[in-house]
Length: 198
Image (tube, rainbow, N blue to C red; front, side):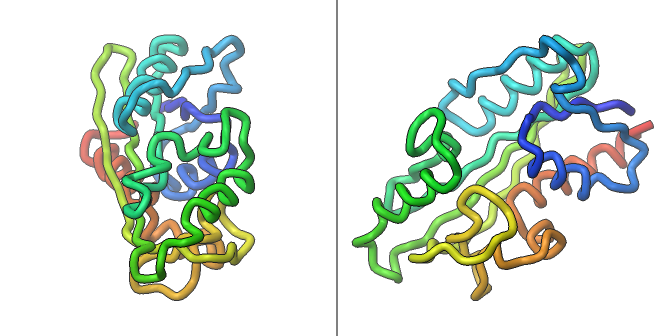
């Protein structure tokens, strides 16, 4: 089975590739299809954005496509940055700029009120218009200082529940086993196994 991953984010692609390893699936990216449209994440839910991207890529390539939308929801910030996680500090903001803005916004939030969760929705879109979605999330808390050099995004300040290390201090395998994206991709993997991925 050939699947196009609707992302230009190499780290996301590596994560998806690791978790789907062993399945008879050949992964492509949008970069393998010149002219593939850049889909604007204009929906107000993770599911809406994931579906929009996957459907657009499936329609353009004529192949099955998967897309994810994911982000961080901080309870003390009423769920922000949410669907704006990748552009929290502005449209072209770097991971570092987004992280710095988050820490500024939370500077006065006490330690016992720094709860947050990472959320991921993966959409699987077939060329015939059929779609499926898979959800994953992980609860945790936001630290005060970035720690660790693995991962990306907000990983250096996110401590998953029950752990004293950030996602960025964990190995890829350790993070995959509990991350929001890892959990959503695992559900996708189970679906592909059940419904035949050949």
